[in-house]
Figure 1 (cartoon, rainbow, N blue to C red):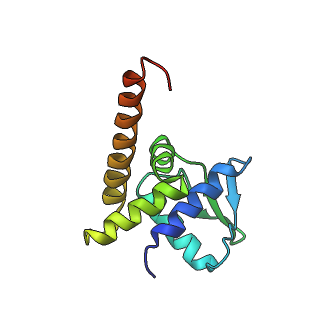
Figure 2 (figure 1 turned 90 degrees about the vertical axis):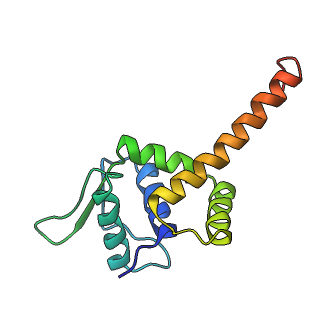
Figure 3 (figure 1 turned 180 degrees about the vertical axis):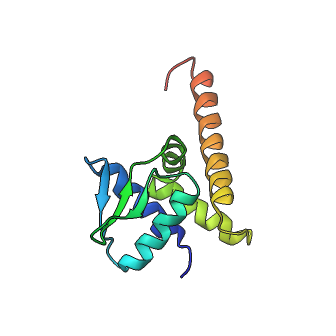
Length: 127
């Protein structure tokens, strides 16, 4: 089984939109339950989610986002930013790892923030 960063993003988004503390047997279109569980386990290993475990009747329980998981998702939530992150990683032939995704997303956000602040100051404090 292979790590799938697109699926990982979808799992994080699905967890966030849930009103429950835990999501049981999460299904994501285009992915098997085994792929979802495998990638959720990777999220747990990297402290992005609280829980990923099988209960006594064989259902998989995927728990809420950690603080780190919330921060990571905030950086890749926007579809446009996510596409930019993937394009930059592909163009520069970088490894598609959590740290690379986080670093590239942070750089994109920092550039946008710097541009917004500069525009704000240039316009006399008005957008």
